[in-house]
Each structure stands twice: as C-alpha cells, then as structure tokens.
Image (tube, rainbow over all chains, first blue to last red):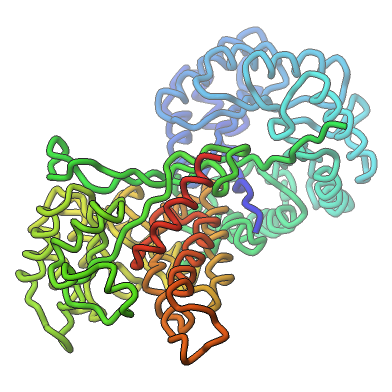
Amino acid sequence: MKGRDRMLIFGERINGMFTDIGDALRNKDPKAIQYWAVKQQEGGAHYLDVNSGPAIPTEERVAAYEWMVNVIQEVSELPLVLDSTNYNAIEAGLKVCKRPAIINSCPAEQAKIERVFPMAIQYNAGIIGLTMDKKGIPKDAENRVAFAMELVAAADEYGLAMEDLFIDPLILPVNVAQEHAPEVLESLRQVKMLANPAPRTVLGLSNVSQKSPDRNLINRTYLAMAIASGLDAAIMDANDDDLVDVAATAQILLNRSVYADSYLKVFRAR
Amino acid sequence: MSVTLVKEKYSSKVGEVVLGATAEQGGTRTSTITVGGDSALPFLHFEGEMKNRPVIAMEVTDTVPTWNDLIKNQIGDVINDPAAWAKKCVDDFGADLIYLKLNGADPEGVNRSPEDCARIVKDVLAAVGVPLIVEGCDDAQKNNEIMTVIAEAAAGENLLIGIAEQDNYKSIAAAAMVHKHTLIARSPLDINICKQLNILIHEMGLPLNKIVIDPTVAGLGFGIEYVYSIMERARLGALANDKMLSMPIICTVGYEANRCKEAYASNEEFPGWGDLEDRGVLWEAVTASGVLQVGASILVMRNPAAVKVVQKNIADMFNM
C-alpha cells in the first residue's frame, strides 16, 4: 500500500446564500457564523469554506469578508477556504488568516490567473482552479482537462506546488445537466495524470443534487464515485453524517487507509 | 550524466516514545531512552531523518530458562539471579535496556505471587540504571494480577509494560495510565487488529506516545517476509499521517529466532547446516537485522554474541 493523504472535507455551510449566515452578515452578529464553524468541525470538516454571498452591498464586501474570517478564527482552529468572486475580499481575508488558506477560485483565464497565482504565492495559499473560462463550462472531459492543463502550467510558471493546486472540474445539477456527471468523473481521472506529483482535485459536491428530491442520496452516491475516480477533496455538507461516512469508507475500500473496526470514528478524529 | 535520486516525500513521521524516568522525572533511572521519530523508511537518510538509533533490550527471566547451552554459558552463573544477570547484560554486553520476562508467575509453573514478582522488578531496577521492559507469563488472567501490583510498586519509573491484547487490554492499560508507565500493544500479525487495539487503548485515555506496537514477529525462515510486509504497512501508514499506526515497534527477536530449529539443532543432527555456534548467533542476528530494515525500534534479544553482531550492524547503518 502506498500511503496517501486522506480525503479532505471543506465545510460548505458558512455561505451568505443561507438565511442565517446572510442575516449574520447584515446584522454584524457573529453567532450563526461561529455556530457553524464549530458544528462543521465536529461533523468532520478539515477546512471551512467562507462565502459572503450576495447578502451585503458590493462596496461593503471587502470589510465584511475580513470580519467573517476574524470571527471564525475566534472559535475555530481550522484552516479556511476563501470563497469569493471578489479578489480584493479574498486578499483582505488572506491578510488576517492565521493558517495557510485556499483561494476559491480561479478559472482558466489569463487575467485572473495573473491576479490570483501571485497572491497565492505571497500568502502561502492554495488555489482551487476551475476548468472553465469566460465562455463557460465545457460539456466534455476533454475540454475540461485542457483548461486544467492551463492551470497546471500556471502553477509551474508561478512556482505553486502541485499539491496546493486543487482542480475543480465543475459538477452541474443532475436534474438539468445529467450528461456532465460522467464527464466530470472522467476529468478527475485524467487530471491526476497531468503532472507528477499530480495536482489535487475538488468538487462543489452539493451542486450535483440541486433541486432534486433525493439530495442526500445523490450526494453520497456521487461522492463515492468521484473518490474512486480521483477526488481528493469536496466542498460539502460536513454535518451529513452518512455522507462523511461514505468518504471514510471510500478511503478504506481504496486501501488508502488501514482498516480498523473503529475506522469511522478515527476518520473524524484529528 | 548526472543522476537525480528519486525521493519519496512523506507527510508525517513516526511518533516518539520515551522509556524510563530519571529522578527529576519521578523515577530512579540514570538515563532514559527515546525511540521513534523517523520521517522516512529505515536508514534511508537521504529521504528523511532517522531521529533515534534503534535499541537492543536484552532478555532476562525470573526462572532459569530452557535456552540452549551456547547462550546460557555466555550468561554464566548469574542466570540464577535476575538482578545480577541484568547488570551483566548492561555492563558486559552493552544492552541499552533490560527486558524482564516473569515466566515464574505462571500458575502452571512456579506460580509466583504478584508481590514476589514486584520484588524482582524492584531488584532489577536497583541493579541497573537503564530503563526496564516488564512482561508477565503466558497466562492472561495472572498477568493482569501481577502487572497491577508491579505498576504500582514501580510507579513513576515509566516502565514499558506488556502485554495488552485485543481481548485483554483494559486492566493493564489502566495500570499504565494510573502509574505512568508505557504500554506494549500486541497484535497477532494482523495490521487491522494492530490499529484497532491502538484505537481502543487510546480511547481509554492513554496518550499515543505511551504506546509501543508489538506486531508479533517470526524467526528467519518461519514467516519473516509476512512480518516484514505487516511492519512495512504500519510504517507507511505512520508516514502517511495515520496516527493510530504511528507508534514505534518492539520485536521479540530472541524468542522467535531461538524457537527455530536452525538456531538450536546440534551439529550431529544436521551436519550439513554448519556449526551450531555460528548458526545460532547468525539466526538471531539475521532475524534482528531483517526487522531493523523495516522499522523495528526496540529489539528484544537473547544471545550476547548475536547482540554484538547487531550492535555493529545498527552502528554501521545508522551512521552511514
């Protein structure tokens, strides 16, 4: 058995799209944000994704984002995934992060690469690289992997370690874009062959089940399939115990971690 | 043309465990021993640090053992006196620490009382300044009785006590925890049970740096390849940040090697096998150097002549 780093869980819950987080941002009341920081850590999250969402006016976003990072760090030791389309907000967050963070995200567009990669190097951060450009998300694996290659080349050029680059091949909701699901799995397989050491891979898992009735089942099933295809990390519901159990069990079934009867419990320990 | 070495990069390392305690630390040892801490596979100094030298514990028993005469003659008269025997191992044979096996506790044999066993432990502690490993007999029930008393009598000494097994670990783990000793967790050549037992003991509250893994070994020619693969898996797990496999490993090499016929059968019986005097030494020494190559931190050995060979092997490999 070749030792491998364990599957990483990025907790998705601190996002302004959720009413309680949106309210927390508007009222400058950290309670809900801090509640979810602690709760997701207890559930098994290794990183916390931080997204302010559309809750607050654009001109206040940088300051609000910095505030979010600070209040999370008051209650949690977990490293953060700074999730915003506003790179000034991300930079404000990076300045106050106590532990190396991950920037979420950078598409395969030259202008954005030039903004994000030097920033990652400066703050010792990782990057989630999206396999898309201005024209949108490709339909097939081949074009996704072509974008991934551009991001790998950028990592090489700027001196970002491959294990700090997380390629996200972008899963879409199965109820409207079913044909993407197998293409994303194939992308995961191919991305792992782009470089040695390979870049890591990540998905915004919950997207696969948007607006479907059996969300949890779809998330679990797709997570198992994706891990088998080469997924290293997922932005996901860290408090869906059955979903975390799937991640732990997939690690065991892929022989990445030595089996013990209490493996589920150990997966959550740190 | 220059050649670039392909190097493995590991995300973690083997945990460090301290054995023994000095007066300032609440014991009476003149020195302590630290094992583990490796950040690569053994002796691959170009890939990572092998922080602490593997050590040799020499085996001393509380009853005269049934070992072959070639070993017993080297030990001499002190074989009747565990304290003097231990001292000879340290002074004359250069043992890093002593492994005291209390076979006399066995209800089928001498059936020594827990208090008598504790007295022997205290005698050996008084005779030598090195850290001590203490194991009981082959009767699990009796071991729980004697180890509870011994752990209390030697409180603070940070003995390495054994053994905890999957179906009998609670009593001895509690004794280690209460009286500040380190525990040997033995699994029957099974990586899954090895990990599970560490989890169970740790759940009771014993810190990971108070546990040493005994994976159970085998002598040369009797399944040592299987031992090697189990130990390799544990070690790769530790280096890949599996905390429940990250403990240093102890190997009862002397016991296993000397159970092999090749280590004791006479020249008359097998004239083609070579002289027993060399054969016995080599069987134990080669078994030891085999497990060293896959990460043994503590070798428990018997034959002083084999100890000498392995001491040189360790020095050569460690200082490469």
